[in-house]
Image (cartoon, rainbow, N blue to C red; front, side, top):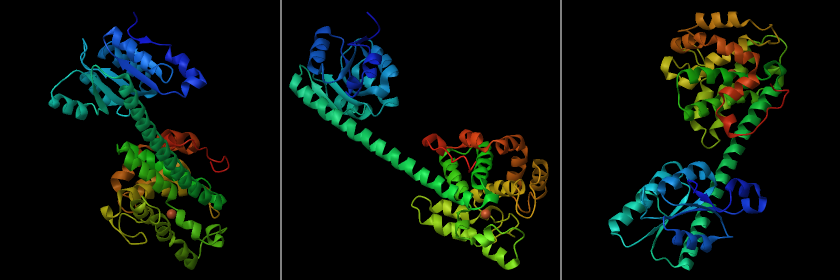
Length: 372
Ligand SMILES: [Fe+2]
């Protein structure tokens, strides 16, 4: 007998459209008669997987875990008991609904089974097939509701990210000279932050901040934003309001309050001579200090109406020169040490974004080609 027995090969079943709409239930029992009874009880309504003990069943779960909606397991089995098996399942597959079939046991065992295995229900043996059917149906209902909620949550998350990208793209396309700037600044910031081993939560927030760091420029008159020449003092004063305008735009978006602070601080300088608040050293949020370096590097290596792009080498030398005055010295030093990665990213921003992005993992969102 194979290590586990399938009514039909699940691989085949799942390739069959009609069958793939059915939920998959794994039944685990060492007694052949019980297994047959369970199979008869659920046959036709669900795709059935079977196993004769906990070890076999774990193999099945390892192979088909994401497809399995519910497990009905006997408690008393050789090799591995039902509770031990279900506890293992719960480690990697908490979403699977678990029902335990058991003889009369103490309430302490039942209580710990419910807690440790995240048990949906336990049913005393000998079981009434009709009662078990009802339990399984309500378990499947719970599973469906949870997975629908998950799908809904993921869709909302995708929509949120797409909106962020759309806002960033709208800004990047407003000015031909800064085309792709927000995306490149995001990439360089991510390269720096990844080298600092930040967790995904920080990286995700930094990515949003990078994409939106100049969003306040949306409010700048095109005559200033796209001026073909150097700005006058008055025009520069208007332009300097973009971090605060950006903060006001971003702060209105739920979840982005902290990011709004980062957006506001990306033109602060380490020596306190930046704007809008003249923050100094570590008063400037770390993300603001990171974006400041990435932003300046991209500004220097991009062609502007009043000058052609500086070379990568000149820009890196300038970052080095301004360490401790304009930039956080440790971050500047790290950025310089990462110059090969930065240069590679600069040569192909789309590929670099796919490589360093956290958001891109969550969404299937292609950039319009004119932006990259
Ligand atoms: Fe800016």
